[in-house]
Image (cartoon, rainbow, N blue to C red):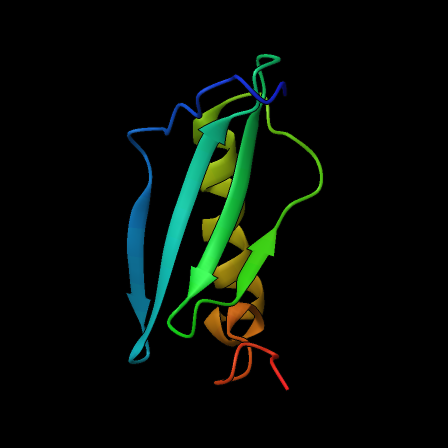
Length: 84
């Protein structure tokens, strides 16, 4: 993606709440026809998938499957955001 490319967010971006925990899911175009997935926890820690998805729906399916299979806690980082 070039520096001048404006991010296009998917309408599938959302907030997911489970077990009293909250995730903000951001899905955006990568400028090459793919879709990037980044998830922020309530402490502003971020998890980014390295590979682009073919569609924004595929990215949403991935986060839903991850939460279903591994639990929401796998995406929750430390309270201090890893800062020292």
